[in-house]
Image (cartoon, rainbow, N blue to C red; front, side, top):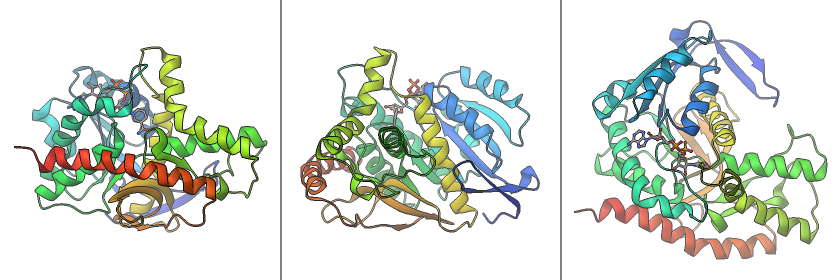
Length: 342
Ligand code: NAI
């Protein structure tokens, strides 16, 4: 979709935001799993995004209709509609430019993200089938865990439908970057608006690899700081799961991160240049790793370029060697869930 931009404004983070003349010029965005902890907060943040003209909130829980009515009273440019159950999925997805998927069960204390596979794999499979049927050209941003496996699942479903375009399917790892930026800026007394730490690999435990040596602005860390930060970033999700003590996992910080990723995708689609975010995508940037998170350039068709890892330290290389077999196993698990299905 080519959109006519009428003015630009600066965000607090210095990013240029496109603001449209009328709501007819904006994007249609669907949130699948919109009644959940992430889904509701994310929908609120998206309702405040001036690039969006139409918001479709979909869930299997009936309350999604009420969530949509509630949000529709906010006096921002977009219209909001609620859709419930499989028979309304098509209507929610029709004409979408971006589909964000936080549907599925979250972790409880003691669980790994992989423990969610048995339930969430099928949910992501079915929702991606909906995308293939109703909006195959939309960019799909997947939040549902285990992201390391659900993104390969979504890609396999699109392949089976003859609709696969690797530029359009992204795993949302933005929360790992948000956390890294926050922890590093606090530790080093830096302006949080400036700090950018690339996080590569995947989105679970040791597959999360923050490249502290590539922190912008250039920052030095002692060996102990590097070790402590790396491990804290890898376990930050578990920090929230334990603090919520059975009440779920990160929802508010996740919604914030997904809103940032969603905005970056829409800015790319609108034709802005120089939009970059780390994301978990299909790529051949790392040998033998069909999916990997690194910095991606976002453009008119989705992921336009996947950046190489760049120079890393011996410490980071050690983690990279360690994470590869684990990530590969989680990728293979996702692929065979679809490819080997009877
Ligand atoms: P939640 O349980 O609060 O909400 C999930 C929502 O999905 C519920 O409203 C439920 O009705 C809905 N749902 C279930 N099956 C569905 C289907 N077939 N179609 C549409 N909607 C469906 O869970 P929460 O906390 O919002 O987490 C959602 C997912 O996000 C979990 O898998 C969690 O692990 C993941 N997550 C991912 C993060 C990331 O960094 N990528 C960070 C935090 C959570």
